[in-house]
Image 1: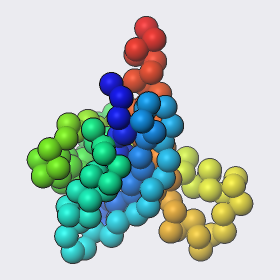
Image 2: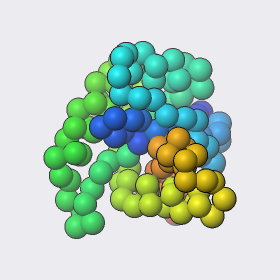
Image 3: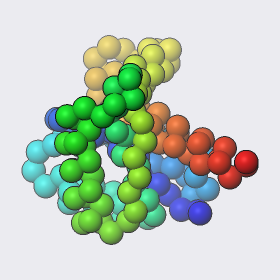
Image 4: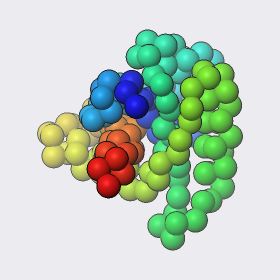
Length: 141
């Protein structure tokens, strides 16, 4: 499958967004959308802008592997969004994605005040990259 994939880190107040390249090899942070106003319209515009053929939403799973109440909230939002934009939706375990994103930003020398602006998009890229790597691994087997 070729085409861009949009990765989402869905939080209570913000949604981090990342996009893959056409070949599904590399995920890049796009930005962050505040969960206020018409969020679905904003995300729909991003799907159209990038020509996304799939959505990958990070699913908050506990370290035990169990889904908690936040996972149900993410599923509800993501499924409503997927219905509006009419592209397939998949979930990907987002465990530790924010911690990895923060470490990446720190290692890159991003100042604390700038990290807050970028963390959601970088976390979305971490989630999407994990998904893309797994898809490549599956195809290689």
